[in-house]
Length: 167
Image (tube, rainbow, N blue to C red; front, side, top):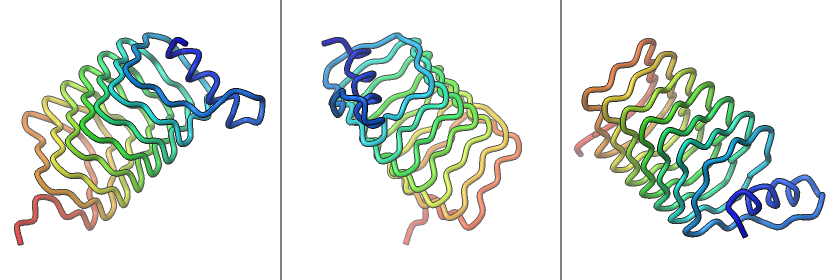
């Protein structure tokens, strides 16, 4: 079954229209999606190149060792997502909600973040390299081994954040 069919079946399942829970493993994708409910979807060792997601819900999803290259995420909800060892290269995030998310060993390279929210999130070993954007907010973000090398953000507002705190 293709990655696209697995993703669309998960959306149907969440909406009570049949389908089945998504479990992508070792798949690749380059499709455009809009208005999907992918809450709790599990993606592992999958590659996305040029895929676009608009108005898509990824709440409580789990992504492990996935690669995203040139993808776009517009008005997507990533609340409570758990990402481990994922790499995003040249991706665009616009109006994405990442509150209460958990990022471990993730890397964002040459990405654009506009209108992002990371309230109450927890990061470990996260690299944000050569990224740019505006209007990025995070209340009570916690993180260790966080690296923003060569990144530039306008209106970066971290309130009560605790990053790279050596105790």
